[in-house]
Image (cartoon, rainbow, N blue to C red; front, side, top):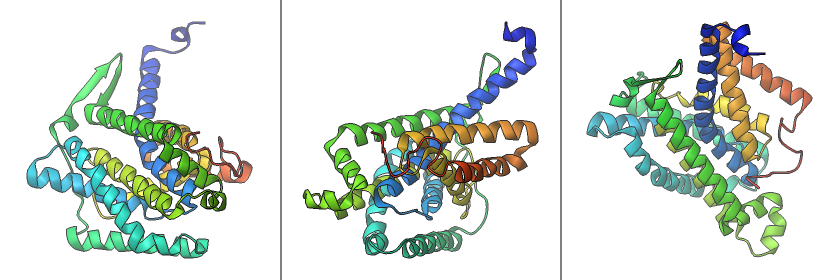
Amino acid sequence: MDPARLLGPAQIDALAQLGVSTILLGGIYALIAVGLTLIFGIMRVVNFAHGEFLMLGMYLAFWSFTLYGLDPYFVLFVSIPLFFLVGLLTYALVMRGVITASHNAQIFTTVGLSTALQNVALVAWTGDFRFVRPWHSSVVLRIAGTAFNLAQVVAFAIAVALTVALFAFMKWTHTGRVMRATAQDRDAATLMGIATDRVYRLTWAIGIACVGAAGVLVAPLYSVYPTAGLQFVLLSYVVVVLGGLGDMVGALLGSLIVAAVEVVGSYFFGTAWKEVLYFVLFIAVLVFRPAGLFGQRGAEMLGA
């Protein structure tokens, strides 16, 4: 039966708009979550400071645009190596000492790092809401009854490209295979001559580079303030659990599910309900399928 006979033109346009918005938002969420998935899958560390590195990426985009007039998408090419170096530094100064410590010590360390970064940002830049508004943030594209922002389309395309590049790196490079071997069995990897500390350092740096790049991409779409990362890191936890802890492909699919819940929930119930809805989904997955919708208990796929 023709769907047009069941739905009017307005309903079809609304469904198309919801579908496009879900895909665009899901691609951006995937880049945020994939770094968290990578760090947990290999290092077995839940990074509670993940959102604060995203917040720093947003401030990098804001100040580069405000002071020098640099487009955020140009700043992206600077942010990836910069946050890679930030990741190396924070690993050496903060994380190296707690890799083999208890989970409680790791949690307190990353929560402390999160609090420190938030307060540094608050002292340095105050708690004011700031906005990045390059020329493309006001350009609206209209295709087949749907409308979407050019900045969102470009952010989606770049986020998907970076996510696919990371998948390819993990699957087809020697370094990626070494990282996956370390994730599967750290002791066996050590016996095979793999320098696990070097693997952890690289993993942390790549994860931070991913989320720093994501911060630059979302800066034209959201307001910038010291606790901006909290909304994204909570969402990332939902995505990671939905996809299965350590499963990068699952994180991508989980991002689309969370984006769909957010977009559809906001459309039918209002934006105030979107977090309620995906946290209900989060709790349901924890209760009925703790390994995640796409994960396997005890196995980390990491792009395999």
